[in-house]
Image (cartoon, rainbow, N blue to C red; front, side, top):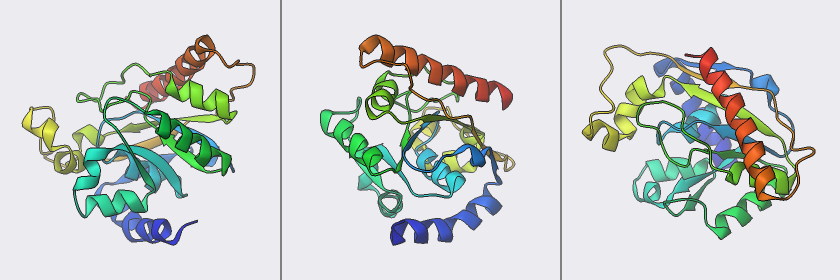
Length: 214
C-alpha cells in the first residue's frame, strides 16, 4: 500500500466518521486481489467516500477538470485518481484499468458515466462489463446513499447547488455505503452482447442495494 494513500486515509477517516456520520455495511464482502467496485454516482466526492468505506487502497477514474482545484487535486491524487476526458473513457483509460487489475488492485468504476443530480440511479454503460469480462475479475456492487442530501455535496457539487439540485441541509444526515456480493464474469464471452448482459446484471444488483437503502 502506498504511503500517501495510507496517510490520506488515516488523516481523513476519523473526520468522515464523526462529521459525516459515515456508516458502512458489507465491507467483509470485498475480496483479496483484483476486483472492480461498481458504484452509483451522485457527487464529486464519491471516490473518497468509497475509499473511506473500503479501508484499502483503491484506484479510480476522474474527469480532468477535478485536477485543477487544490487541495482537492492533492487529495484525489493521493487516492490514486486517474484523469479521463469528459464524455467517457478513452482507449488509454481502458488500458490503465486493465493494468491496475493485472496488479491485483481494487478499481472503482461509476458505470452511470456521470453524476445523478437527483440521486436516482441512471442506466449503466457497458464499459464495466467489458473490463470485467476481459480482465476476468469479479465486480462488487456498491451503493452510496445520503450524499446528495449532505453538507459534503453542498460543498463539492457547486454546479448542482447553482442549478437548484442541492441545498444546504438543516441537519447532518448519515452517509451510508453498502457493499453487495461479488459477481463473477464466469460464462460470459468476449462479445458486445455479453458485455451488455453482464452490465445489466451489475446494474440490477446495485438497484437492489438502492431499494434496501431507500
